[in-house]
Length: 122
Image (cartoon, rainbow, N blue to C red; front, top):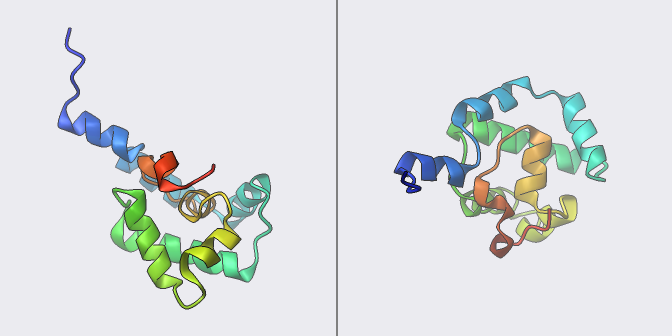
C-alpha cells in the first residue's frame, strides 16, 4: 500500500479545508456568531474590527479562499496601510489578523496560517 499523496490530496492538506466547506462556513455566518467568536477569543469588537471583518468577507466573496496566508496578509496590509498596516491589524487581532479576523468573519483561512514561521500565536 502506497503512502504517497496525489497532488490534489496535497493541495487539500495545504488549504486545510475543502472549497464547499469554506463556502458553507461563509454563507452560514451571522454577526451574532462573529460577536460570540470574538468574545471567546477575548476580543471586544469595535468599529475598527468590523471594518476589517467586512473587508475580509467582501474580499472572500469576490476572490475566494487565498491559497497561502502570506497572500491574505499582504491584501490586509495593503488595504489597511493608511491605518498602520500589520501593526494596526495585530493591535486589533493580537493572535494574528489572518487567523483571528478570518475566524470571526466566518471565512476559512489557508492551512498554513498556523505555521509558526508565519508568525501567528493562535
